[in-house]
Image (cartoon, rainbow, N blue to C red; front, side, top):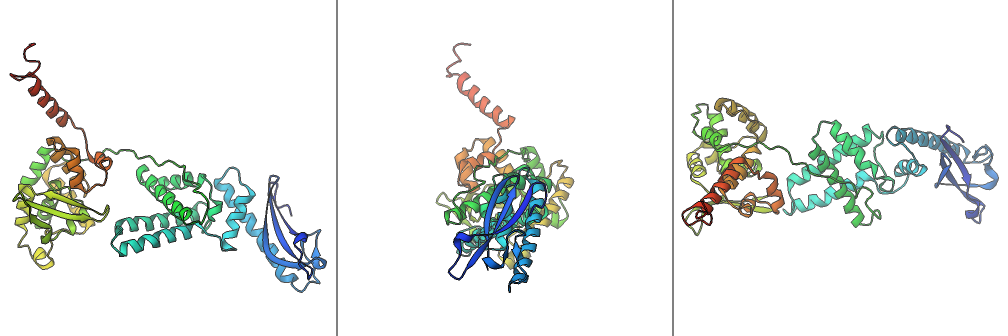
Length: 415
């Protein structure tokens, strides 16, 4: 039956597969612009009960009502899928239409099933403390965004893995950008989707990853951090409101240790110890990377720890510092910045960047050492935090000048 100028659907008997009792399987043929795709309906009928001209069961057939009802519904559903695909895909193929229809009719593996499978496997690792709960939350968030994308943009609830085209990654990325996500975050979710499909490829669900070739480049953002004079001013500022003073102190502590919010929130007294060098150190496993962040404590963070030893919250909970919830912490930081006259957007991350840039690298602490203290598995990750500032260049050039042009310098004699 020709539905429109591009799409036609035909129901026909596969007579060469006729059984001994005279029953032949009913097949469905989708034709789009002259290109065909067939699939079995899963139903059979006797040849004598089939109306070849009209592609339906004769009224004399006992199963005519059920078969013809299936035919009408299938025609309507195939047309609906075709129209939905045309909204986002310039050249719709009959295979695309078939693959959108079949997941609901067969046991073929689907994209959302793949997400659930991937996340369930990772949840098992989290239970064994071999995976990060934060990563699991991110994977589950990606699944929710993917479900919204399929429903709102493709007008479907799921998609057969075999029906995935390379363009799906580009479409998903564009959808994420339109939801006001930044480029890096949008790419991160597409990267997770690639990871999910790779997992089911490894488990034999499909033969290859159709979006494996989609590139997810990282664009280095302009990350804010405090200059040393701003950090000193923040530390020395007299703040009389207890909740703001506590948030300021926790923030300064992070600036001198490099700890992210989730780490400083979970710090306890037992994480502080005296090392072989007779100095105080602090060490905490970082759940995100399953590595430890071990940092020798400078005088200022030591002073802050001492300040809150007798704080009621710390005494009762055994926590090292009085840390608010993430939302309150970031909210109070805005007030702290205003009180201290700092015209920068202070967040849970800017302290970590301040440690990496202002406190350590500008003072010639090697990148490898900074990477270890930040709990990174790769120096590449540390380089995202590290900034080559004008002060760093000035310090390096001054050291070079002192070396070359001092009394015993190589170039002193030539002047």
